[in-house]
Image (cartoon, rainbow, N blue to C red):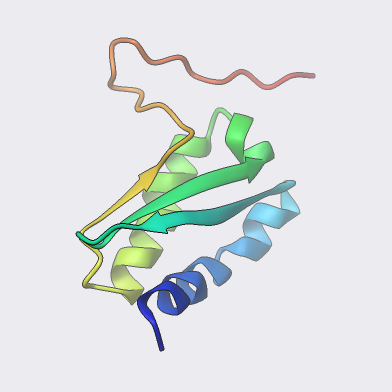
Length: 92
């Protein structure tokens, strides 16, 4: 099984939870340094809890299932520790 397939398999364990809230995730790329770059989709891209979902869910699931992955990045969320961070607000 390829590296990409193994990462997809790890993501598939969490997709039902993301989809239940109107979201999803895709792999944008896996770099030559084994860094996975993800894009959060749907409500996950604008949810104020997206950073928690990413850190506590997606990142951990990938690194546990595919130990040769060196890092996991989400390309469309902002780190809350960044002084220039803008936390997405939910639109009602």
